[in-house]
Amino acid sequence: MPKLEPFVTDLDVCEALTHANLTLVPLAGGEGHGPGYRLAAEALEAGWLTVTETSEAGTVPELLATTTAEVPVLLLDGEELVGAKQNRILNAAVLLPARAKTVIPVSCVEQGRWRHVGRDFRPGTVSPSRMRARKGRDVHLSLRARGRHESDQAGVWDEVQEELADLGAASPTMAMHDAVRHRERDLAAFRDALPYPDGGRGVFVAVNDRFAAVDLFDRAATLRKVWPRLVTGYAMDASGRRDREERAFQPKGPKAILERLGQVACEPYPSPGLGEDYRFEAEDLTGHALVVDDACITLSAFPNDGGATATGRDPGNATDPSGPRIQPPSRRRKRRHPPTREVR
Image (spheres, rainbow, N blue to C red):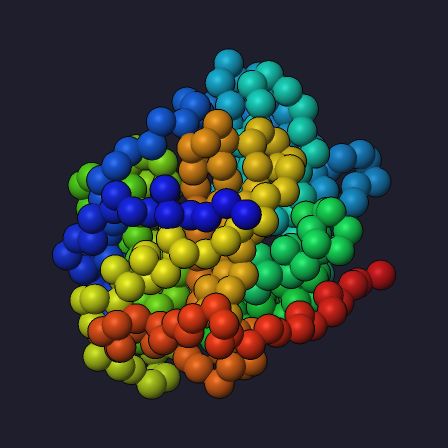
């Protein structure tokens, strides 16, 4: 099975940025050589991309993306689409072919609405890393079992409800977007205090000085464009956990996580668009990457909470200078994955 080492070994760990209980460590260097593309948010705004329900009746786990752009268009995993019959988030990063129609896999993040407020979707934020991690594990289970990019919809709704509760936000339709609107002033304070780091094409994220996520792109220009929406998602994670235990951040933590990422073996699956969807789950890390023509377009990694439960370790502890305590393969215990819950 392929590994992530070629995509992470040339990264430089830069000086950390901190606001309140959120720490962002930029990752720079080694620009990729993948195909050119436009981001979905800018393509939607420019009219090169429309995203609609698949039919008048619609179906929760799928949407139809139609692009007239002359180059591929990149949708991000966890990216929010607002409108139509209910708000959704992407279940995978998808590189849409140029001038094509593609059915894309999504999850609902607005439980109490199933009616049109418009025919097309508009771009929203990027989901909190905690939600993306849980959804990603469930999508991986679905790919293994059924070959489909399906989430545990009930689990996604649980995460939305927890975000609303953590942020003290009321929503008549249980919409994640309402949490963002309710706490916009606080979230804007994070964005203002954490500007895009010039040259960065990735970021290591810690909340309360505990590892929360790594997001990596093939080029700095992509991270620069998505930075405000990514930081909004990270800030949602941080704002809901300000009163929880804090630890002393260790600068060696990001390097240790990157080294560990390079060791992880991936399971490639066909992407709904161009390229392959690499999925990985170790005892300590879980995540995914979109690989097109041997270039990693985007990669996201998270602490594996399921791994922590199984082993009694804390894979999210960024206070250990050596990073996660990784056992050799011969001593790692195999873990049974819980069944995916289905909503009917």
